[in-house]
Structures are given as C-alpha cells and as structure tokens.
Image: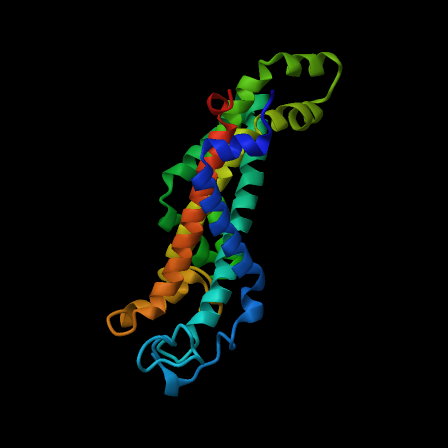
Length: 285
C-alpha cells in the first residue's frame, strides 16, 4: 500500500518537521498580523523613556512590554515591524534569484554549447565576488533602498540555482520522456517547461528553503553594517546594529530582534531538512 505524501514526510523526521512548521507558522503570523497589533508607532521617539527595561524588570512598565531603545522607541513594535521587513526582503530576493537562476540553468543545460558556456562563466564570475564587495558596489551605485537591497541579495543567490538546474537538465535531456516529446514535435519551450522543469523541482525546492535562511542572515548582516535598508525602515539587522552600543546596560535592545532571527533561521532549516529527507528517493522507498 502506497504511503501518502504527508505520512511519509511526518515519518521521515516527525519532531523536526513539527518544530520547524510551528516556528515558521509563528513567524508568518508575526509577518501578517504583527504590525497590526503593535502597541505604538515604531518610529515614535520619546527621550524621556529611553532605555526603559522590559515589563518584568523592577523599573519596567507594561506600556513597553519589551522595553525601549536609546531614543525611547518601543522595542516590541519595532521588532514586529522589522520582522515583516526582513522576511519580505528575504522571500522576494529568493524568489527573484530562483526565477533568474532556474531560467538560465534550463537554457544552459538544454542548449549547451556556447550559450551554456557563457551562462556558466557568468555564474563563475558571480562566485568570484565576495558578497560584501558585491553589496558595497551595488548599494554605493544605486543607493540603499528596499529594491536595491533585494536586488543585491538576488544577484548573490542566482548562481547556485543556475548550476544545479543546469546539471539536472543535462541529465533530464537524456531521459526517454524528453526524447519522446521531441519526437512528437514539441518545441524547446514546451519540452523545457512542461517536461523537464517539473521533473527537476525536488532539489530546487530544497535549495530554496536553505536559501531563505542564508539570505535572511545576509540581509541582517547588511543592515547591521549600515548597508541595508534606510535607517527609517526598521529591519532586524538595523535594530541589532543600533542596540549593540547599549548592550551592556540595555540587553533587551538587541536580544529580542536577535531571537526573531534565530527563530526564523532555525525554523526554516528544520523544515528544509524534513523536506529534503522527504524528497530524497532513498527515504521514500
């Protein structure tokens, strides 16, 4: 009796899958509803309440459950808004890099020859650039905006999708179903997107889940260094960068943004590992 997809996935790694799913769902709830339930305006400055500790501290207040930063801004409100910003930038960058990388990889693997060689050499050039150098070059040229940061992260991540897609496409082209489709007169576009792409999605899905965690950390690093989103837009990396000076006397300014990054990365990695085990043919026998 053939096992269902859900039962096989849960049986492969039940606890990591459940834990990863719950963490990811919690993050999604924060992304969707967080700014709607934020107690105050995240940009509201009140220097009379600067570095107020969390509510459970002796001098804390329930008006600011997670305390305030060096400008008196509410840490909870800023963390909720920052989580949405960082998540949307990360997912957008992964989607763009996946679309570009998969398209170029399919073209390189199916066409081969000079076209494939040029695309793969472009991927080699991208690999040769350290991420920070690439980010500085792009952001210094076009300015620090949400679009620029997203484009920078997408430009950093497309090559891995292109390489894996090219390798999988080269193998798929040798399969009987591709030869049959070509013999029936199917054009290149139909063969690629109707027959090849659906059969090579498994490793690409795994790469996409891993890329979300990697890109999130990269986006946070850029914002921490002042190369990310504008200061007026809160992101998790920006909050940690602003609060690091006050960590010794106000740990809460960076603790809670840091926990959100850890929760997102850990949850996506656990979920990605479970998906990888499920999509691995050796786990599904």
